[in-house]
Length: 361
Image 1 (tube, rainbow, N blue to C red):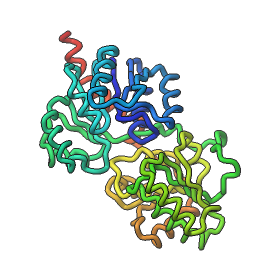
Image 2: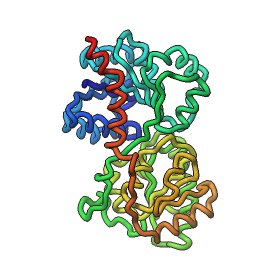
Image 3: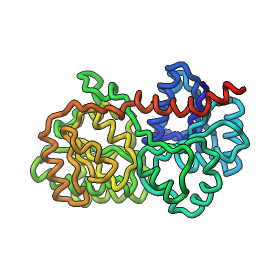
Image 4: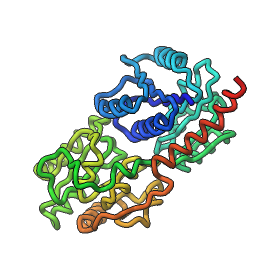
């Protein structure tokens, strides 16, 4: 089977990390996989691309930022050259563009967003026109499907496929330390893009409370700087509170497993998520987790070492982080949320719609 994976931009973010895992898994299973995008590769994607290339996955990203017509031309060329049996489009804009192409290849659209994209009137109108050009609509959470049905209507093939991670990559190992030298013994880490919805500001405020009880604690914030003003606000708050020596405000990290192994607590105060890869990675690592009490994290509420609290409540959030610093790591069974589980579910969709066309051809 020839599978084309389409993303909006090759960057170090949850959807792209999932696509990398799916592409490598399917390639190793004997399929031919190509990954392409609407936008050029970002610098933080270099390590992921190296993994894809090493596994034999083709990467066909545009070298320059195209306009609307240029994006369509690029996609059309990739489809003509690779000749996929099935296309999996991740995120709203990517799915809209690929369904405008004059091709008969079956397409699945995967909804990753933690917010309702169809509150944008233009996107809603476009989706209503192109809805049936998708063979399948996939949501990484039930909320994605509910939003689609409410805003667009019922589609003949709708399914929830939760994200999955390769748990073996995040299991505890004595080797492969994080690349930071002299990692503090009481390090709290938050991984995620610098956007308001990820709420790094809440973590910094709560961490000030942590230091009142645990003066040796340290906070490490890592992620892609997506909203410059928000990133500046995080840096400014750290400076305002006099925490420069205790808080590291850093860029993206590709060695997530090593960072989690070197840290004592994982913080995730997101205001919204669909089905976070970062959250799953933390669960797989066994690290104590303190996260916001939102529906998408609810499935983990009974897991050992997981505390779901109102992270906008600084006192409650800080108290939970202190408790987590004294909580041992846990072994968690992620049945249904492994990369193998997720890849198999995607392949069942591919076979359902692509194999009849191959047979008839």
